[in-house]
Length: 120
Image (tube, rainbow, N blue to C red; front, top):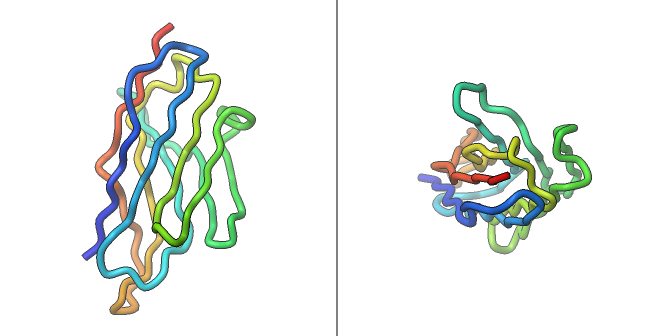
């Protein structure tokens, strides 16, 4: 059907940067909004940033000015550039996409998650 595969997580010191990528593949007719969520241990999954097919973006207040979401429609890929990372950014980051399949079925899809750890 449809798969989302993330990459780019890792361990970084506070103040450092990481870039996450998420590539969608499979029976895709159209990708609508794409985004990133994160979940820290013992906490709920929260929105980090989203980007529409028209490239309108939305950010959580906690990451505004530090994170940038972008997408390459030709590659069915969404990116999250994370700068000035803080220990509180430590979480598993999940890619999310609203996709219309080739069967014209609309659904939300999730990646497997990638760990981001920021040391102080």
